[in-house]
Amino acid sequence: FVHLYSEPLYRGSERLGALLVQRDITKEHESDRLKSEFVSTVSHELRTPLASVLGFAELLLHKSLAPERQKKYIQTIHQEATRLTALVNDFLDLQRIESGKQAYDFRPVPVAELAAGVLELHQANAPKHRFVFADRSEGAKARADADKIRQVLMNVIGNAIKYSPGGGTVTVSCYRDGDRLAVEVADDGLGIPREALPKLFGKFYRVDNTDRREIGGTGLGLAIVKEIMQIHGGDVRVESEYGKGSAFTLLLPIDGGERPRAPSPPEAG
Ligand code: ADP
Image (cartoon, rainbow, N blue to C red):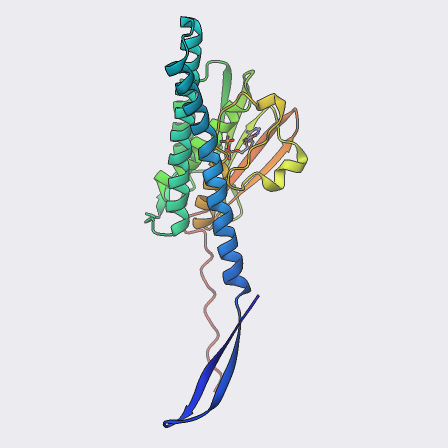
């Protein structure tokens, strides 16, 4: 995309002619396109549960229904309103993160301790699951914002439980990987189809297979995880076999892990 315009060219007050300016606006155009695509996705995501709330509320208002049916509709309204709230919260969270305006408080964080704490929190609400925690990080600390990493761990460990609906084992392992601290969260749940893997961290992306249609979510959780990890100079990786299980690995820079720079040789001469 090219923006063409002419600028009058003067010498003193004498007009010499015009200057034809050509500016490449491909980048601006692309970012505008992405923005409007995002807005339309968001409106669509909000409209679907809203339509359902409205529809069921209207049925309740205008039809005389048996009490069981009423109760069912009210449950649906409650469920959809809960989904809307989660969507708006996740969405605002992602916006805040992406705007770059959020302050990060980077400190040395014992991530293994953090992971153990998050695991314990989830454990209380997942009676069908078995939890294994292996810490081989030798007390290594990451350079991280503890609250943000707690949020990431909540998300990834929460997913491991949520996407193994029949129960199973969730294993969290912490270890050093060169100058990075790794936290691997593995489950033996539903797994992820190979073709979904490249899209998994995209906004609003959800695997829409019959095996997980009943499982609620916004499709923003992993997008938030990815953003937070990148702001840390870290990364998140996924390995999965459909029907067998998944493993998400979070990588964070170890605090003080940067090698000290070699002293530069004395200037010649
Ligand atoms: P959601 O709100 O749908 O859980 P996420 O962004 O957290 O959104 O995850 C995106 C999709 O990735 C999910 O819809 C789910 O199908 C898949 N997924 C994430 N974690 C796992 C996991 N541990 N096992 C299987 N599938 C997973």
